[in-house]
Amino acid sequence: MNEGGCTIHQAFANLDPDKQARILKAAYKEFAQRGFTHASTNRIVKEAGIGKGMLFYYFKSKKELFLYLIEHGINYILNEYLPLLDDRKTDIIEKCMQAARVKMEAYARHPELFNFFGALYLSSDVKLSEDLAVRLKEIRNLVYSKRFTNIDTTVFRDDVPPEAAMKLIHWALEGYESELINRIKGKKHELSSIDFTPYWEEFYCYLGVLKRVFYKPEEI
Image 1 (cartoon, rainbow, N blue to C red):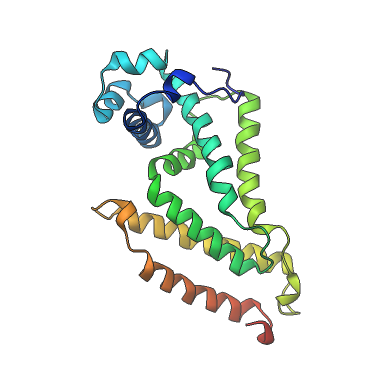
Image 2 (cartoon, one colour):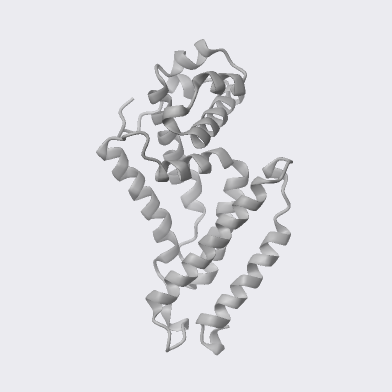
């Protein structure tokens, strides 16, 4: 598989969906937790409940599997995650609120994938091709731009620079998202069954505080 290409292994794509999902989940989890260097294909096949021969039938090496995960994750973000982010909204807080909901719901469905990409952006234990590194940066910028394009800055107080207000709002909400992810990671039951209602009620309370700090009174 080409590092910078969009080719997906057709044989693996045609594998039984349940087995495919188990392999992907186990591999994302292993690489996210241990990085490329220390990841073990033995642990991956044990977690996935398959034979090692099956894994290496589809992926000739640990590096090839790792690159496939990146490609699969990029396709998920482009085709399933980004389309859910509504860039028509012009209120920065409303837009960030909607983006946070999408992210949390997606994380609850695919925690290993998001943990994998989080670790990948911070890791230096594997050297990627320049093309693939550029693609990953572009994906990150796309997600960021969904939040910060087409913003109505007239809602901000006159004594607050719009650029500063947007950055501070972004940092505050990113911090809350990270805290929320850490809190739900500790849940013993399946993430997909978590009732997010109390979290969103708390989140909306914080959004109200941000509006009172940065918005003109008539815009609150």
